[in-house]
Image (cartoon, rainbow, N blue to C red; front, side, top):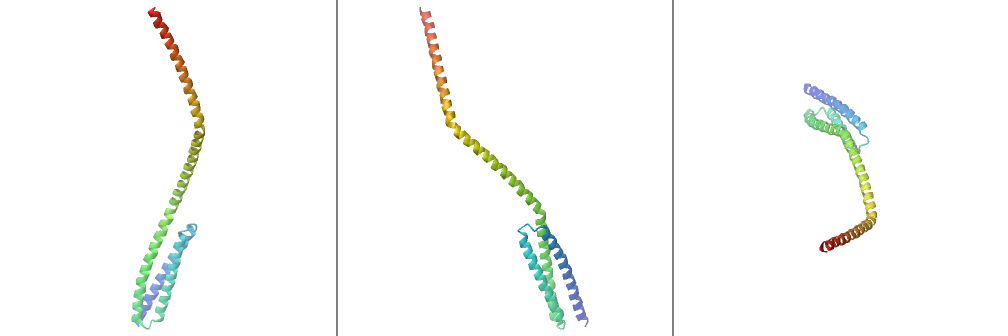
Length: 181
């Protein structure tokens, strides 16, 4: 009789702990999901949370079956041990999931800021590239005209230099002739 009461007490205590954890986990998941509805990766978290809730419901049904089979105390104790081990693993998985969601929620503003900065940088680079392309196009269009203009200037300078050299040559020739005479 006392072993039956102990098992009942143990099952009730386990049920109470599971219920408390479920309430805490549900409120944490609800809070996170309200804050991150626009993030598509949250869908995976929602699915994972739904799977965890389903797993928790399965555990609740297992606990109910344990209470119904109280007459078979040795079997019940073995099942309770199994459920406790599974719930500990489940709680650890939930804690890990909560940590992952919390880390993601903390990184989200930085990710958004990095995205905005990158978008602004790309916009500036695109504008600079468009300006450079426009300048290159203008220079390409003006290049034949500038080449003609430079050729004319060079030809004019060569003609002027030739005329100057001829004048110098004549004046040197006259000076040499004057000295010779």
